[in-house]
Structures are given as structure tokens and as C-alpha cells.
Length: 380
Image (cartoon, rainbow, N blue to C red; front, side):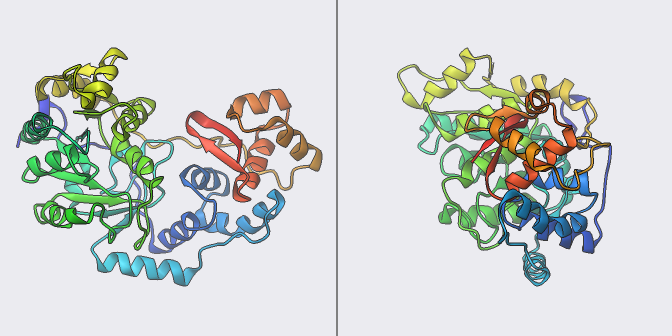
């Protein structure tokens, strides 16, 4: 199969890594510990240098933030998860390792360990996301399948969320050429359950499945937006075929825009509420799509740009050993339920960046802080 538009047949990342099993175990323990999300994980790794060093500092950091009972994932628990994953053919990969979608690795909230089933080659190909309504029209289903088939023929892998409707149509039409299912739950908790056969067919045809959730995790409502950021983050662009107002597909489109991805929308009848969201996206500047060529032409120049992993937050800003109580009080007084930027917090407080970052980590590990997109933070 020829590469699309003469571009590269795989995405490449400028800095490749390969974890030792000891490092993988430490990373798994860290991300499975209480109040450690992807952004906190990255900040801890940036400042501590390794997951092992971060694990050693967690209890003290949480205590200083006001929590003394922080649960830290034990070695036996992490070893059991690794063994169970390997037993199901799941690799737990870090950003930058072969098989971890390169564009997802370049996002600022990339999963520190991603559970991947399927061949490395599929994950490293240029990827286009196709999403849309679960209650799709016949025309929408047909067009989603046509797009997925044509993109597959052009050398792209198609990624979607294994949901009913448009997702299902996109996956089925690209099984032979390569498709990737993004799961909201663990690899052993497929949703919807009736799509277990579809996932099996995807994997049997050298497609792939990815999830950041542990085995046994049943997907909840809040897990689907988290899943959506993986769909958009792994892709060059996101195509929305049908979406009503306030649909999950529009959340995916918004996340795509925040991640710097191309957003495409298929126009629909003004009389069909399933087209209201896509028509609005076009009004807001999304690229109108009437065929796969519109997508291929738009992403061609993007594929020529090299990828790199996110930079460290501050190479020369280590943790403050133990911030002064008056610094903690001042930072806490400046925080509230409204998200504010880290830069504004540093500027207005006049406190050293390393001290501010340390206090924020303490508060987050204590369950008192929320990190938002764009580097914003607020109190829980």
C-alpha cells in the first residue's frame, strides 16, 4: 500500500525510549497510586528524575498537602497487573516506545503507560479519527464507512471509540486496512458488550486496541471524555460525521482543537438534529468534508513535520525541599474554584517557580487541586 500523498508511511518520534522492566513496574505503581493523573505523573517525573524517586517522595508530599493516608500502589499489585496484561497480549507502553501512538505521546496529558493490543506497525501509521452519533442515520453510517474505506486504501489507520453508530461503521469499513479501537474501560471490560465480536475481528485482522485503564475497570460516564482525548490525541485529525448539540463527538472535536489537531465535519440537513453539531463546527471553522480527498489534502503538510516528546517543565527547577508555611498560605489564598494559569500564580505571588510547583503538587496529591487543560489549576 502506498503512503498517502507521498508522505511518510509511519509517524516517527525524534526521541525513542525503551523502559527496563523495573522502570515499567515503578511507572505502573506511580500512575496507579491515589491522585496521580497523567499531568501529575509527568510533573513528578520531571522533577524527581524517575518514577522510583517519585514513589519515595509521595508520602511526604501528600502529608505536606494535608493528607496522611495516600494509597501507593504496591509492588505485588503492580506485578500482578503486568502479568495479567501480558497474559492477554497487552503491552503496557510508555510515551516514546515503539507501539505507542507517536502523536498521542506528544500531548501534554499522554497516559504514562498505555495498554496496547495489536501490531506495532498499525500504531505507528498515520491515523485519522472518525466519530459521530450513536443514533446515526443510514446516510451517516454509509458515508462514515465510505470515508473509512477510502482512508484505509490511502494508507491511513482509522481510529474510533468502538461505540454504536458512526464508530462501529468506521471500524467495520477499515478492518482490512487497519483500525484502532479506543476503550473507555479495561481491555477485559468492553463497552458496549455486543461489540466484543467486532473487537475480536479488529484484532484478528492486525488492527489494535488501546486503553489507559487497568484490567477489570468498568467504564463510567466520566471515562468517555478521557477516552475521547486519546482518540483525538493519536490522530492527525478528527472527522465528525453526525453529531447533535452537546454530543460526545463534539467533546472529541473540542479536544482535537486544543491538541492542535485538524477538525473536519460532514455537513448535513438543517432539518436533522443529528447534523446540528457538525453544521455548527463548520460555522466555527472546521474543514468541510465531502470525501476522503478533503482530509488527505489537509493533513499532507502536517505529516512532513517531525514529532518530539514534550519538554520538561523546567530543567532547572527542582522541588523545594519544604516550602515555608507562609508561602503555602499565600499560594492557597490565591487559588479558588476558578482555573488560573501557573504563570499568573507565579507572577502575582512573587514566589519562586520551584516553590509554587511543589505546593501545587502537594495540594494535588492531597486531593485538593484540579489540573485543567492549558496549564490551568483550581481548587477541588
